[in-house]
Length: 399
Ligand SMILES: Cc1cc2nc3c(=O)[nH]c(=O)nc-3n(C[C@H](O)[C@H](O)[C@H](O)COP(=O)(O)OP(=O)(O)OC[C@H]3O[C@@H](n4cnc5c(N)ncnc54)[C@H](O)[C@@H]3O)c2cc1C
Image (cartoon, rainbow, N blue to C red; front, side, top):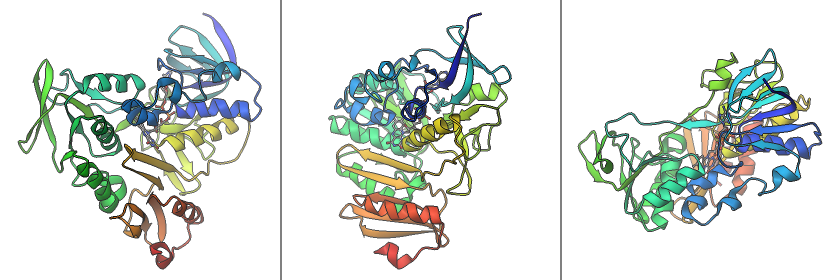
């Protein structure tokens, strides 16, 4: 069996994997670096998949991380359409789908997430789409010509509804929630985004549970448990993701309560010389003083950096405050630091009606998160408060 030695092996060609490779080179690692990805494409900005790339404003070349020649220019090897099949942490080897066996010095697992699939009648009909990769966006763009139904009330469904509406499609959104995005951001902020959607013609079916899809061969309608039938020429489902920990689990790495690969504060896993970053990492957050697993682009990027430094011998913990952003076409956008999860109180600064506001989420007297629309500067203060964990001054927050 062929066996190769690689100093830094990275499994996963997403934001976390790419950021780790780039950091290794930028910060002086001169050993061999290999990135293995089962994607057909080189690493790209996944956040563009539901926004500019789906909308056709950005080409594939424009969303590639680092640009087209980054790997060649930085002497980093990239294997696409290749899966890591087996990890042997004792032998320090990874077996790939092309049968190569790689002996690593340090290993980073950055295998990201898989979309959650719906198991309902009609779920296999043509015209039902899920969205994770560039190829999915290509199919949706070609296939979703007229009435499109989005399933889900979170950021994937709302972003796709906005993008497709801007492209002239008629979009309806079916969700369990009363208000879009309310689970993560509450009803005040969620209501603002819902209004932006309905103002642009998106039809919202709130508090509705999906019963089945109807159609012959191809989907023609979405039926809810309350008995609503919504015509559909295509459907896009955005009902969450699960971390892809299959490789880590088979190798016997510790898995946490949130389903991720357990790491310490510097992103080291339970196996010697093996690190994890991005959607799969369930890490000890020194900022929040608890275990977190977060599915945000910026977190993947920053954890990639921390993991690279840890692989190079640093003892510094990952201490970046998690940041998230979302755009609804060119109608509005938001930025958020947190994550708050549970909060006891919301304080609003600015004007929700005018689309220039910040929602501060408090847990008791402490800040748990903040969401800003057109008020980015407030997030700096939010970061300070999240890091210091000091009691907030409510008058200051209200502005
Ligand atoms: C459509 C869409 C829009 C988004 N928009 C936003 C946004 O606006 N803001 C935001 O903060 N976040 C957004 N996110 C979330 C964000 O993109 C993710 O949190 C981030 O991409 C996670 O990065 P990652 O590197 O951990 O995983 P991923 O980007 O999922 O990359 C994982 C990589 O691992 C590879 N892989 C998996 N298993 C194997 C294996 N066994 N062998 C080889 N390769 C393997 C995969 O092929 C992939 O290349 C969005 C996500 C999607 C899908």
